[in-house]
Amino acid sequence: MNETRGKKWSLPHIGPAQRDAVARARGWARLALVLVAACVAVVMAGAGSGGWLVLFIGFVLLALAGAGVWWMLAHRGGARLLGGLVAVTAPVGVVVLYALSGLWPVAVGALALWAGALGSARASLRSVRRPKGMHGRKTPPPRRPVLIMNVRSGGGKVVKHGLVERAEALGARVVVLGTDDTYTDPEAEARQAVAEGADLLGVAGGDGTQALVAAVAAEHDVPFLVIAAGTRNHFAMDLGLDRTDPTRSLDALTNGVELRVDLGDVGGRAFVNTVSFGAYAEIVQSPDYRDAKAATALDHLPDLLQGEAGPTLDVQTDDTHVHAPQALLVSNNAYARADPLGGGRRPRLDAGLLGVIGVRVEGAAQAAELALLGERAGSITSVTSRRVVVDADRERIAVAVDGEALELATPVVCTVRPSVLRVRVPRHRPGAAYAPPTVDWRRIVRLALGHTDSRTIKEAYDV
Image (cartoon, rainbow, N blue to C red; front, top):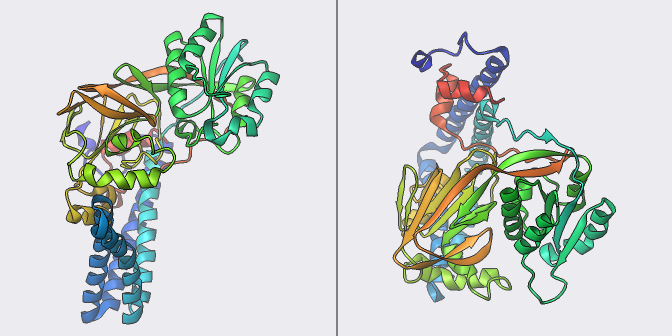
């Protein structure tokens, strides 16, 4: 059906729901282009001959702010102080410049119109890109659930919310970790629980502990329960669980549904969120990191960013080769946006693909480009892959697996195990927040002109 490419929107082989989705997308796309045109018109009408220079200087100052951040992170001493000063004062300078020149109404109007254009463009793509979501399957409640709870995770959320008592009242057996300085292996506890007849494994703890127990649950094909009692709870967030009240996760014991999700694998070890290589992985190896994260990062970053410390990585995905990234993030399913810190959201956990984000910034100029263009900057590589091989100029490299500091032998191989984990979640839960798509302006133009390609039709069926 290659004839669909380039044809007008009125395609006979899509149903009413899909037609409505494409029609909404076309309407939002046209509004986005109108707002872009209005933004340009406001700038051209209000700037005047001398105003263009002021606007240009404003962009230069914003680029300097990005360069200042680079100097602050990549240097020490006076250069760091100067970089921090530039990073702070440059944006202030933009505001002062526009205020003194009388162009602030133009700038505010243009920014408002541009924000409206971005919102409309995202609404257009959202009309045909909203994912189906992970549909739950109704299953009987577990009869012999075993929950592993770390009382130290998340600043003591297990004790604060009375999770042990609540779980036991619902018929679960609870294994408590972290009551003293003795280390208890959660994976060993999970294996023992399965051997004794557990028909569900659950964890109240950090994502690293979640991954260890999830691997056991997947191996024995028993359901897994996530209780959002860690610090960041990224896995719980993308499952749509309530992170503010971890007691609500326990509702899954009596009134739950089952999801099938993927597990990542790095060198034979499971991960539920991310594996980090490069700068972040090297920093978390420091014993001072947990008590002083910012200070430790600032102390290590200059050597790491300038290549004087840390390994030189060489990364091979299914279709892409990335040489010497300073930071590399491999995620269990792709993030909606290319955030190298993994602070975003994953629209799906069952796509059967790894997300790969590599970053290499070689100087202040590229840092300025990153500040202006964000994830579209040339210093960021963002792809998906079923397999990722990370080699280096060293026999062993630092790796952070779901935030846990490790060292692994090279080459390190990351793969994805599709739909191996049965996750039991409450039937009534907040749900994962929608992650807005990155704006593809070429596609917005095609939609506005009424051209509907096969990709749009396929995505419309997901609405």
